[in-house]
Image 1 (cartoon, rainbow, N blue to C red):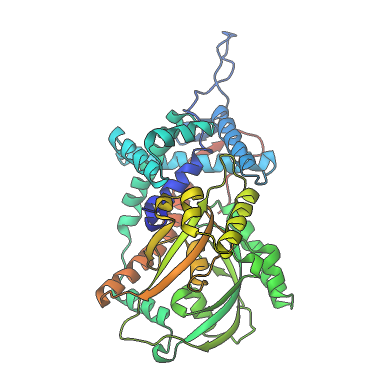
Image 2 (image 1 turned 180 degrees about the vertical axis):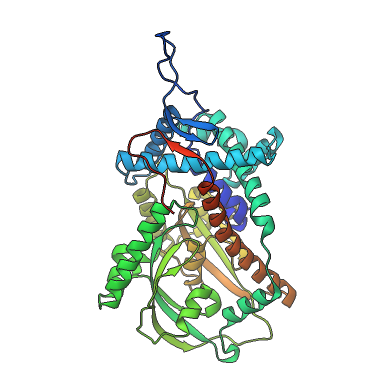
Length: 456
């Protein structure tokens, strides 16, 4: 089964696979020259976190591994001081959460860790032994990777207890969501043609990164409003997969667009840029309404779930494959498939997703079952059309849509889908708020010169 069909497992697998190149070895003890000239050494302390410490050796190990990972990906490496500050802030936040988990009595046993490692191997299309070899070949000791898996599971259980289990969605919220997906005039719904500029800033990013992204988005908004060509701004600045196309989304039904965009469109004229930046779970969006047209579908008593039959070829970045190499290889495959080549054969040969053995076929995908970048690209394709290389957290994808259909789901099933979408959005925001509160109530003392806590 392809990892794109199992979003929760897929997202976890990808994040943990990346973490393998970022996380440090087992914690080192604090070392510095001891009084009295005994000759024994203990590591210098980088930061005190409540009743625990982060040592400079731990910080150096983490920075070294992140730098190595960025080098493997041919990605730019921030200046040393900036990188160390970002990494230390992330380590502080992680340590605070682990301390909270211990306080709450949350623990993860070896059996749970082993089951997770087996699922990760399966999600990456490998048996456990092969997966372990791949991890170790990337320079990450298996003991370190196992420790990181335990940490991720612990933080996941903590989030479930402290945040996710407390999220509730009312029937009124479901009704409003469905109404927003269908538009204010259900029988006369218009398709919307947008251009957009996306600046990445996930809700769990540091305050410094979020503020920088928002500042950049606001500056771009002013440029767009002052008459600068929107598509040129998108090509130069957007971090979305469609940046090369000037951020052009084409015509989409409101149900295919974020609700915030649909709401904005209700007060916009064609050609107008939305007067404010839109905050999403992934970052900041500047949007321009290009045009409206009469909806191509028909309304019904309940919103219809349109499913897409799709297949893809995934090339992961890292482990010897750079971003330019992945893009170039997929462009070569795209040319051969467009000239009559067998997509399924290429997928079985090259794809690094679990769906490779099925020729890259992911089956019928419902809204919300894939990551946003994949779904947005998929939704712009006609039947049989091939995408350009699409970047997601997993790597680069070559996507082909095989068909679409309206699901036969009941009203209750459709309402359940809406409830899940609302719950996920509320949980992401609540988690970001909870992390900030947890950080604000913790005692943190930076011991490295020039380091200060992130401002809220």
